[in-house]
Length: 81
Image 1 (tube, rainbow, N blue to C red):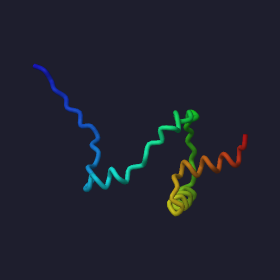
Image 2 (image 1 turned 135 degrees about the horizontal axis):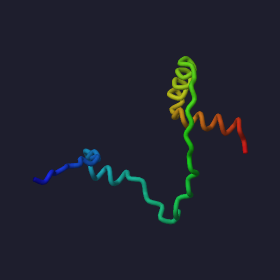
Image 3 (image 1 turned 180 degrees about the vertical axis):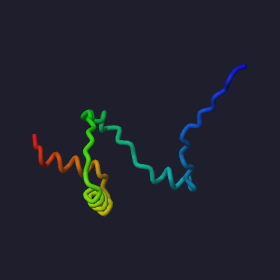
Protein backbone atom coordinates (compact mmCIF):
# COMPACT_ATOMS: atom_id res chain seq x y z
CA UNK A 1 0.00 0.00 0.00
CA UNK A 2 1.35 3.42 -1.00
CA UNK A 3 0.78 6.40 1.24
CA UNK A 4 0.06 9.72 -0.45
CA UNK A 5 0.89 12.97 1.30
CA UNK A 6 -0.59 16.21 0.01
CA UNK A 7 1.21 19.45 0.74
CA UNK A 8 -0.90 22.57 0.74
CA UNK A 9 1.27 25.39 -0.50
CA UNK A 10 0.55 28.94 0.62
CA UNK A 11 -1.92 30.36 -1.83
CA UNK A 12 -1.71 33.94 -2.94
CA UNK A 13 -4.92 35.94 -2.72
CA UNK A 14 -6.54 36.56 -6.07
CA UNK A 15 -7.08 40.28 -6.67
CA UNK A 16 -10.65 41.35 -7.36
CA UNK A 17 -9.65 43.38 -10.42
CA UNK A 18 -6.69 41.79 -12.18
CA UNK A 19 -6.25 44.60 -14.72
CA UNK A 20 -6.01 47.23 -11.96
CA UNK A 21 -3.59 45.03 -10.02
CA UNK A 22 -1.30 44.71 -13.06
CA UNK A 23 -1.45 48.44 -13.82
CA UNK A 24 -0.57 49.36 -10.22
CA UNK A 25 2.35 46.90 -9.98
CA UNK A 26 5.72 48.38 -9.15
CA UNK A 27 8.04 48.48 -12.16
CA UNK A 28 11.10 46.25 -12.11
CA UNK A 29 14.34 48.21 -12.17
CA UNK A 30 16.43 46.11 -14.53
CA UNK A 31 19.31 48.62 -14.40
CA UNK A 32 19.80 48.30 -10.63
CA UNK A 33 21.85 45.11 -10.82
CA UNK A 34 22.10 42.59 -7.98
CA UNK A 35 21.04 43.60 -4.49
CA UNK A 36 23.74 44.40 -1.97
CA UNK A 37 24.54 41.48 0.34
CA UNK A 38 22.77 41.66 3.69
CA UNK A 39 24.95 41.38 6.77
CA UNK A 40 24.46 38.13 8.67
CA UNK A 41 22.28 38.49 11.76
CA UNK A 42 22.82 37.06 15.24
CA UNK A 43 20.02 36.60 17.77
CA UNK A 44 20.19 37.27 21.48
CA UNK A 45 17.54 37.22 24.18
CA UNK A 46 17.10 39.57 27.11
CA UNK A 47 14.58 39.68 29.91
CA UNK A 48 12.86 43.01 30.55
CA UNK A 49 10.10 43.96 32.96
CA UNK A 50 6.58 43.65 31.55
CA UNK A 51 5.99 47.38 32.00
CA UNK A 52 9.08 48.26 29.92
CA UNK A 53 8.10 45.78 27.21
CA UNK A 54 4.61 47.30 27.10
CA UNK A 55 6.01 50.84 26.77
CA UNK A 56 8.36 49.80 23.96
CA UNK A 57 5.66 47.87 22.12
CA UNK A 58 3.17 50.72 22.47
CA UNK A 59 5.61 53.32 21.17
CA UNK A 60 6.63 51.11 18.25
CA UNK A 61 2.98 50.59 17.31
CA UNK A 62 2.37 54.34 17.54
CA UNK A 63 5.33 55.00 15.22
CA UNK A 64 4.47 52.10 12.93
CA UNK A 65 7.84 50.37 13.30
CA UNK A 66 8.84 46.88 14.34
CA UNK A 67 10.24 46.46 17.84
CA UNK A 68 13.31 44.67 16.48
CA UNK A 69 14.06 47.54 14.07
CA UNK A 70 13.75 50.15 16.80
CA UNK A 71 15.91 48.21 19.25
CA UNK A 72 18.58 47.63 16.57
CA UNK A 73 18.60 51.38 15.91
CA UNK A 74 18.98 52.15 19.63
CA UNK A 75 21.82 49.66 19.94
CA UNK A 76 23.55 51.06 16.84
CA UNK A 77 23.45 54.57 18.35
CA UNK A 78 24.83 53.37 21.68
CA UNK A 79 27.55 51.13 20.22
CA UNK A 80 28.83 53.08 17.21
CA UNK A 81 31.58 51.41 15.21
